[in-house]
Image (cartoon, rainbow, N blue to C red; front, side):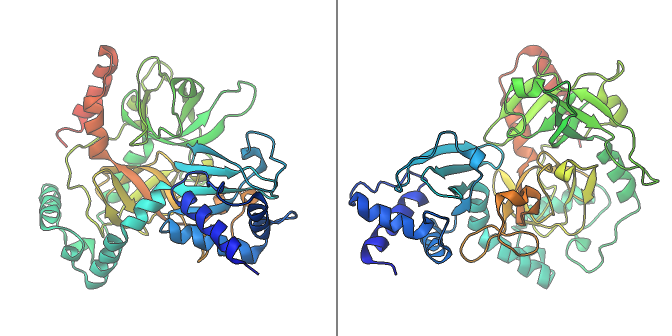
Length: 427
């Protein structure tokens, strides 16, 4: 059973972990800390009942933004400590855009404490998400969107001969040009792969999209540096053809020496792509204009994602995906995405790009443990594709354009980036 000393240790540890700082337990006798931690983790593996107690305290202290998860042995950068009292190491996971604290004690399996920034923002959007659900149920956009937002969207749709009526109604049919315009947009979407090893097959990393004849837009956490970009390539046409066969595709190396800009805050990278057979990739596959103007999507509106989930052949997620919340930088939506979807373009029904997908928010149980798609508790050995997600987040295109306008670039790179910006200026 838990003693008052155990409770005090757990409360102090949970409070510190909620701030993502290593727990300062120096105020307790060493033996008190060891006993309390061993009750949770045990010498021969975690004790599930005490582990759930500890999870609950961390979850409450952090208002659901910090979670305790199992970790893989390979995540530990140093040999494990021999003392049962845990030590910790702070690090940043660029793959999931989350701050981690790894437990470095003698626990098997090891654990980590995760501050999921996207989950924290999703949590902060709870009122917007609830308003969106009400607006969809009542078929009233005004219950989820401000009058000026609705007016901007109405003006933009009117310019294309469309109205707002279909956004929350029962009729989810679209014009036939939805298909042809979607096919055009999809051609510019590529699979991003690592070609660091010239002897081994390319390793799938994520998704990217052409925004100019020679410029690719991807995530910063996928290609964070010029060295990473120099060891990566974009594969165009990596999809299944009309007959259901795997079609031929073209691999174009990335060329950061020609153009390179990355932004960690908005999680995007713009990088040049080498020509294919003497031709810019965009001349063969087209590109998607970056539209700085707002009013491209409202909460309740259906969004569409073109991506390479799990590194697979190109797929399109449509209809079962609604925009549910937003802030000045991010859009939040409910599409089905997986590892490999990072860097995918997110479109409205007119196939205007509204966001750059950056990741999903994990679905968790009452104790904060991540779940699988079939409702079991997720563990690392199941692989990331087995994890269930309840929502997604993407950087707003309008914010990406503003950042690119202000980017300090050398003249040749500035000319290439300005070409992309101006292509979307009049759209």
